[in-house]
Image 1 (cartoon, rainbow, N blue to C red):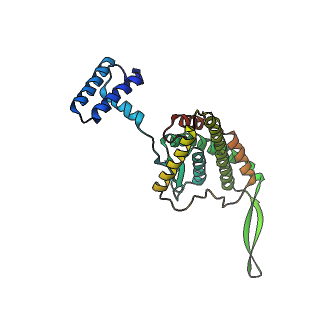
Image 2 (cartoon, helix red, strand yellow):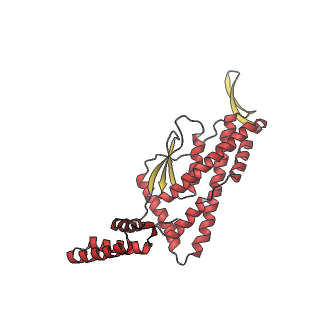
Image 3 (cartoon, rainbow, N blue to C red):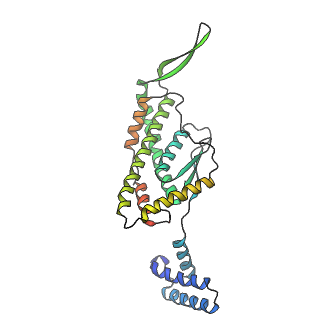
Length: 282
């Protein structure tokens, strides 16, 4: 039998359409006529009827939002909050909403499959780059030249007094600040890419269909999230409780600017979703 991949889509669609008519009519004679016509076409083209039926079903299946759990790391692993920050930043630029587990070990992503796929692909690449860049920064020892402001409490004349002091930056503080700045820069870069793509595509549409599709997608995702999410409160992101290091943040921002976005799947996804018309397209 000829491989179904070698059969033109239009033939599969014709046969599938006849099968649908055969299955939907209440008239026994009509059903037999449609089925016979489908079988004749299928036989001439060496197409299995099951293949034709599934082809049409696949084309007509309307994408809907889903929830997917994204693993971030094992419990008590250090740095998970900045990992989460990176994923959330990527998600925000790809029409995906997120809830974060209290332990930061996983993220609950809400969106269309193709958008979540894009987020996972970007995250896998950028996480490696972020960790590698922060490791190199710490090993270089550059952070040691900086200081961090801390508040210390002392006893004076029987009273507790707080004062600000400059202390050497600890490696964990430098790494945290570096990764926070890296993730923030990635988020801004991807948001800029998204805005550019939409500005380029939407005005070129032959009708208002693309703008309407974008709006419909946003509404559908908002409704799905509000009905599905069980989150309480809002994730506030990683907190540099150990202190603020401006030098480490500048280094992290530079690394975020230089990070590779792979083959820019966010561009491909945006273009595809804008032109596919999923009923709710990006």
